[in-house]
Image (tube, rainbow, N blue to C red; front, side, top):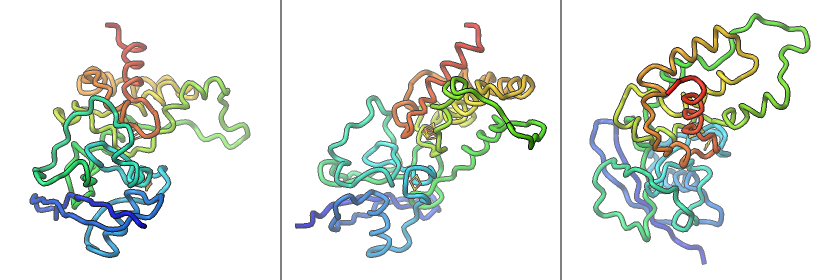
Length: 253
Ligand code: SF4
Ligand code: FES
């Protein structure tokens, strides 16, 4: 027998008013939350808005809050939402009142926290990208098209490997500092900065330029060491650890 599941989905038409819609439908084996949203679009309400692209936990588009945990919808199975272990000590993410939510039987689907909602589950990522651009996450080298174009040893690569895995999903903006301080550079941005600062191929000028941004008051010094970012990151980038490393390596405390 195909099991039915109940969903409570945040809705917002973008005019500041929000409410929650309930849906109940049969869930096939292996169905992800993203599949469930497609099902809702196909069978109940074609206006439901959400982002996705790869469906394979790579593009970083489908971040949302599921049962109060920031997750990738494409990597979260409906059947395991209630049984999977939740990250410890998450802040309370509140979007609007939903007094009717039954956490035992209903899967609650809401947008990413600490970002403004454009429509339903689609948030405005522009502040995220603005801060991302500010750390200038790229090399600026004279082009060399004679092989080898760039050399990096395996050992040198290992020092940045974890940081390279970031898919810019924005889940780590669940950080309480991002909530309180709209000027906080952000965990993903600081992890990306650490990735470039550490890169053996970076020039002294570029390293200095990135450091001058991340050492400003609203960047590394603003981190309050909650480590929520480490706990919600789907790629184990550990931005909080990256921030700690920048602090240890570049700030004399
Ligand atoms: S650090 Fe992790 S949670 Fe933050 S944007 Fe990158 S992959 Fe997503
Ligand atoms: S759809 Fe690309 S990460 Fe989920």
